[in-house]
Length: 487
Image (cartoon, rainbow, N blue to C red; front, side, top):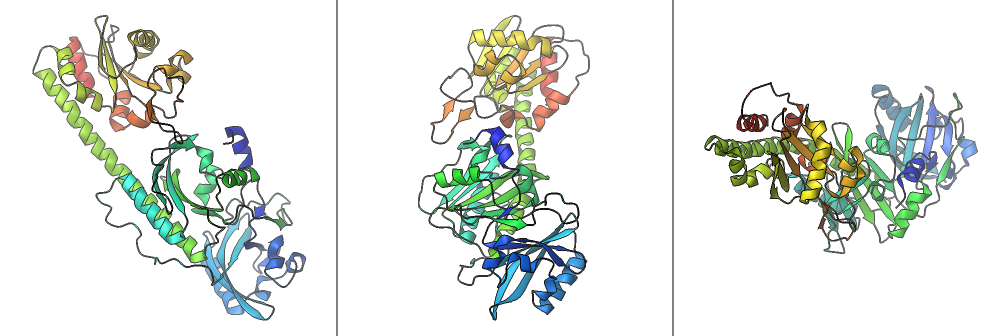
């Protein structure tokens, strides 16, 4: 696993193209070839220097060129799919690919349509059906199975991005093993071979052979501006050798990555790995994989909204349970203890501490009394003016609290007193084969891998933090009820 600095540096290497396809860069209305990948010699009956400044219409079938030209004129701002028949040694060869415009140049990527390659058994209909009652992990499982059916690859994992450094495996399908890695948390570089922005620009990316010797595009600069060519949208783009080495260590021969995008952000990826042999994919299979990613992205976006609403309703029910209990008795502390499960479930917490009249009351799984006392001393000045939610507490406050919790939610009961309710979340770590262990408080052998935010930063908590309570006089009971009603 490479560190973040070297990973980021490696992601910005540009210019190389995988050898199983060719790149032609076209300029002007005549579509003159001004840049070409050096491996063109392996496909065409000529060298790369012979193709430079040749017009595309002199290389491909005339009717197909005219059709391509018309499609580009109609939709020059988007990727244009294309098919060309090229005569090589008096034999007709079909190339499929796509064209897109970058910096006033037209990039044409072509892949030889090798009829010996297996085709997908799937058509173009919807891949994921009967999803109205499925949660996100069930959708991910269906998508993993569909991706394996389409590609025939050995292993398919669906990752959800947790934060800038980590992903979680939420679904896996393996052709040769029943063991699953679902729930495993790993470094983001284990799944993402390029910078995140590249996965937003391209729905799919295939490394057909980790041992491939990439080809340079010549000349390697923009013929007008003399600046480096922008190859970020190049689907044939290779990845840095450091990343290829990482794949080889895992015995991966080929890897296909499909983006999952929600609200213009990379939500996760589908990673299809083939261990048995290097594998090229026909262009129509790539298109089906792209459609799968687009459909899954749409369904996940819809499901996220549904689950957020369901969570709001569920937590509102829990709040009402607590409020009903409080309204039925004069002792709100007793009510919280009677409905302790609802009090914890309201914010998906494993434990809570009520600090009232200089006394601590513990509910569920909590740090030690001394740890809580030390934490209150740090939190109290911060909570005087407003409620506080702290993610990654050891970064925000003293590193001494790294073993207490990675985050807390604290609500003030009185602005004029030190009374608080503090919720804690017991985090679970399952990093690549490690057993699941609680890391809420001190455990020197286990690395905290998830932030508290992942579990409790839902709409209810946002509302608690956002809300500005009106100044009201009253007892602690009234103040506590107002706090809960804010949810």
